[in-house]
Image (cartoon, rainbow, N blue to C red; front, side):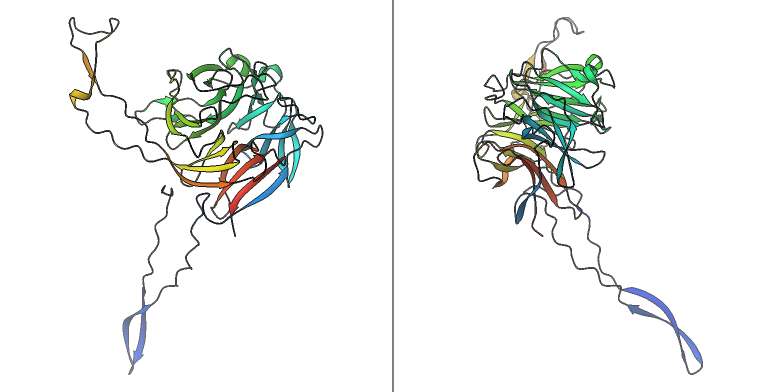
Length: 406
């Protein structure tokens, strides 16, 4: 079972000593009296930190655009600047996949058009400064791009459109703030995009408004992931993306091989990590789509397209690496372009330890209707500190939440 972060220590109930004086036979005597302190408040109910236990599913809002009738909600995101909920519509009013153009802001249980110039928005992520980054797949993937909007929902025009030969069929999106690693290395903020047409992961960094199209640098950090399909009707591949700030790790779901993989980001020096490190693969993952980090315990929350289930997986702590015996080390001969004495012996390098596998700690059905309803997911907490999970449902064209039963 995963541990809850930020657990507070319980205060003890101790008697309080108060000084007082009384008069006896004309003389005053000082004495100390023990007066019990105010009894502690009744213990609070255990904080709901996972999808297990009594929960209820509620509909927050329709996601159908009130102006043009766009449907098929995919991505859901929480704006860090105002706490509002936003949803993307992948299809138009006729149901044509990849032809949707709108992003909805949910206000008082109703959708309001926030942006209407997207092209098949499959995923999105907010900058902490307010701009929204959208992964536009389009109808064919090859007509897709990454699009940045102003915090108000206004367009940057062509300055906000990012294209690059490495980005093929944008299908997932996540943001990582700048951070400093334990070794003192600083990494700049970055947005990540999953390319479903070629099974790759790209990092976008060095951006600044308003010239996102010319200033943004694109670096491929993953490749060779499983994928199949060629258009908005059948594409399956790397999709859900979530940045774990506690571990400085990017997690990516891949519906083509039912896996979750981990990638790292070290700025411009980041190398292509291929298919990444497998965190979990196989059942109960069933065409996994969106992924989020549980803000209370750090677990991975994943929605399945194959059966409309939500899965919770706990990440074990990375164990300390034990000393590696010489017999287990790989001998590497120094490259010719490295400064080394003539005839230097091979250098012993320890093997890279594998990432510990996650394990399933929860599973439940979110929609009992036709499979393929779930795409987007976001997680936060309510005023009582309990877990709240938002998810989109294209069977009903709604955005819903999973919350603890009162």
